[in-house]
Image 1: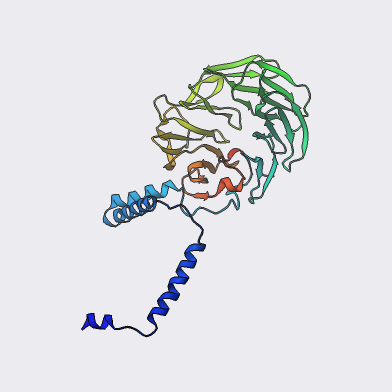
Image 2: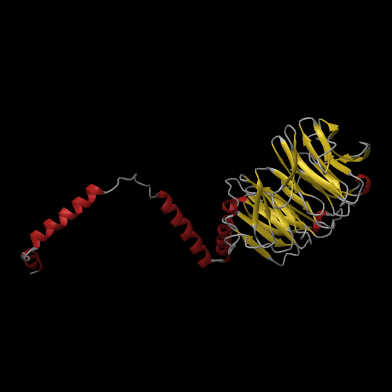
Length: 378
């Protein structure tokens, strides 16, 4: 009976079939040809998602799988944009577009096509460098003066409200110029390493060579002290705000020096490679990042002492943590996380976290931006 009913013709069936075929054939002829995609990536993504869900449903180790997947994309519930800073002060941020000043309210101003910069001692000015130029600017972008030199890098500003100096390196070596752009002179020939002014001192400068850290009087060139340093590319060289401690971090270790070069803290050799480090403004704490086997961790040392076991982990995730910087009040640390395209703000106490996503887009850059300093409330 079923077969017989299926064979009974329906009135108007054939004309309707012809009309439908014409519509389909016309749409097919007008379509835009596109290359056929392989279903494998979608299948793989579904398989990974199902594995994570099943793992979470079946066991506690399964929940750890979910956490690992979340780490691949950074901190959850990150802000879409840098709406504000968690502490007072302003950031200097370098990107492919140039150097930016970021206010505490999240406002951003592009200073110009500079690749490195640092704050003046009281945050009133910025000294910036590009390939063949040193420039002094106001934070609103107005240029005070420029100095043409070959291969300028590592500009640093120091001094009092009435007497300042700027140190920088170029192809001739380590040079010093007055804050008004006059009196440029060569201090250390052929020196190309990182450099840092000692605060609260009469223009005392630290710089790194291949094997040592040296401290000299920038007015006379007379040496103050020198000490061996961890091997490898320098990740950070900076003084505490009171000038009593000096940090030198390299890819293979960290050293914090006290008076006359005495080591107060050492990390390495044998530790995971260091990607970034910063000394707290008060000099009593240290934050650093390490990377090994495709994962990175950020650590804080609340109280610097020869025993390195006091470090506490602040952040852990996949990829690279590329830079760290302290807020002026030493309560917050900002960590660069290029793999996740995030800036992560962490309380140094470990009791708070704020993350900002879409960072590269906000600073008009393909490569991830770099935080060159967090300074000085207005």
